[in-house]
Image 1 (cartoon, one colour):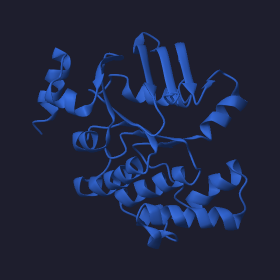
Image 2 (cartoon, helix red, strand yellow; image 1 turned 60 degrees about the vertical axis):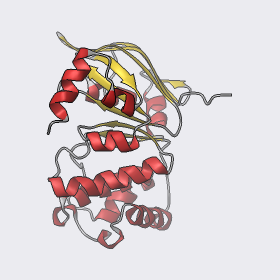
Image 3 (cartoon, rainbow, N blue to C red; image 1 turned 60 degrees about the horizontal axis):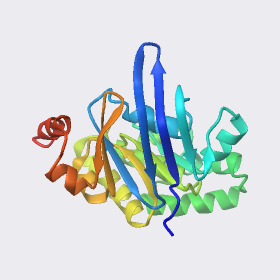
Length: 247
């Protein structure tokens, strides 16, 4: 019997005044799969991602996470959010806390872990993302790539079932992009369920089980990365890929 999807989005609409950011998006993500969403700026990619943990509330449609439909019940939203790690374009680290303290804080507040347990998990996650030696360093003394890896470690320390990445490398210098993508590739190999909005086509080729191309708030095309890169069916997809793959 096939696994039930861990994420299901049904006919999702999101309006910001006159702007229709999402226009009837439906998709499902199976446990352990990596879905990469690409498309031009303003196509609805980040809005879709933010609807998955109710940072944005849909105008119409349904979002289901691990069999639970998201409603406006704040208690339920908070419960679902504990299962979802999110990594943003900007790192959102507390500048006055060390890397270790940034990772232990939510564990203690949300998961109710003791200081010792939270610290043990934080150190393990820092090692996992390759910066075990930066535990006592403040964010301002870290490179952008290192800060983003702390942000990933912070999300992983909560033992999420799902990781969402919203353009996690777009604020980074080119030489730092690889170190963050390598961490994400490792997560993909370990079987983490991931939904990634990115412009990094190499990562999409290497890690994605499913590639989604969005424009004008709709899914224009979706399928295996090799199919879409090598033989896109829609003219809009062809145009986008021809522009982005030249760079």
